[in-house]
Image: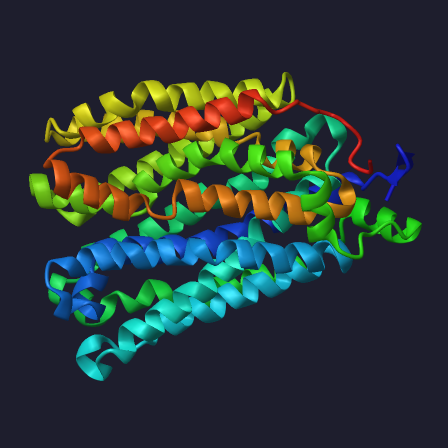
Length: 434
């Protein structure tokens, strides 16, 4: 630690870089696990776990993706409670371990052909554990990086947490793509699908080691020294700051919902079934969009350190509103080149709206309830945003026979986020100990 600033010991440069790296690595592992499941649910789980349901099996498979989101708020409440009482670091180590156990468990799970109805039941149970873990992960990782950062660089250091999403997506999609390239469809269906889930064990060990070495948040340590930690952070949060919770939550639904259009699996399944492209071809397009998403996440975070974070986020939201219909028009050309263009352009608005989010959320809530506020807002936003994007998209497609209704649905989600973000009072650079 170096000299104090605004009453808080300012971390040395190596400390806040280590905190940002630990947040990014841990979140990458968490999202790798989450995306592996979402993509597997789109391409194989209907056959492996829900075969007796016939054509409804694919819809049910998408529902299992959304089920985990329902349990995110519970994970957020408990993680927020303990994160605001005992510290950010301890809770983050626990959420990472929980996610790893659930993901490896899915990779070892017998299918319906082996144990009947126990297979989907256990799959759903492990998916719930994944959701519980993710509910507590993001808020803690975001705060660990933002609370270590200099006040004028919170956006870019907070983006380290956000980079876990495109990095996790790259790892997950890259692993699945490699499996589909090196295996026949029969091998992948028989045993190859398990490999990406089992590889999570190695990633968890790496993430656990790195997170154990990072220092606790200096803001939390300052609160502990002053004895100002809340004894009931969740109750205090909803008594005193309900408006901030719901504004933060709805500022996120557009990014989360539109993001899950790419990463949730519906688009891969739709394009391969409708236009006859291989899974590998579309997974490569998803990989490319993850790179663009990551680049513009950093651009948005960097930009937010130079102007209001809400302005930057709303540029991203506006791009998502404007591009929702053209996105599907390009997809529906059925030409691979235009599909790539659509997915790459789609990721630009996602990145700009996503990059400033950790710093914005951290600055919206007082330190004593910040973990609870950021985590719960994120979890609520995820439920209304991405939880059932695959399910709703499939239902809209089945009901209308086309994708225009899906485009309007995504447009409306982004419009809601635009309005919520517009109503948030920007506090860029404000003291985090207030």
